Length: 314
Image (cartoon, rainbow, N blue to C red; front, side, top):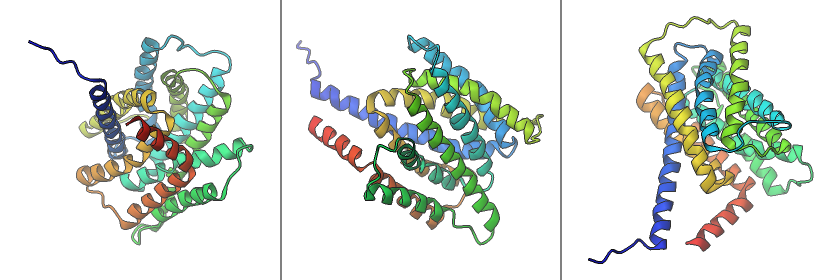
């Protein structure tokens, strides 16, 4: 009996299908984390919810880094990147994000967060002024901001609350962008799992301190709903989500993996509607399209190079 081994082209196709499936799964996992956080916020205050989440996720991610990476212990300039990520990306970003989610739907929060790649590009041009801003890039940056403004259009029934919620979530996106540029400027050679794991170790205590400073109640009556939401945020969106992200990052690179930001709002909207009965407004859909168009303009050259490389490889 003759055994036919799979060809190289067949193996490449299988790898591509697995990568696409992983990409969609990551968008699903992180998208559904928005309604999960909103469910948790019904019982826990925002800073404390974020603190409890990263207490646990830090252990998972740092444990993964210790098992998979030869140099996972930081030293010297590594700590500058870790502190920047811990303060901006873990602590400030998630405290503002969860606070904002108290006032807006999961879809709105996810769309505003999807502006992070555009904001990061703008912040990078400020931090590295040698990179000139051409007219198309400037247009893309303004489109990103315009998309957020469209989403922020307040509801007639809840003008102040919805606008305030969008402002908080947008502040969280800005914090992430600033942290990402600060990490880029330090140029640490720590792996992504080690950097993010140690950043969580730094950020979680800051979130606990912020929770106390804000006067949030520290005793929580854990309901079954809150426990399920926390388990999902820690085990699925946190542990499994980050491990899947690291795997895809190695295969796709930072640009392509960033495109998951534009899949997340789709699943956040669907999950918010199915699980929490949240409405999806036309303004949210239009705003998402405008933000995505802005990303396309800002990253047009890199996207063109990636598309050309993919076409050549096929």
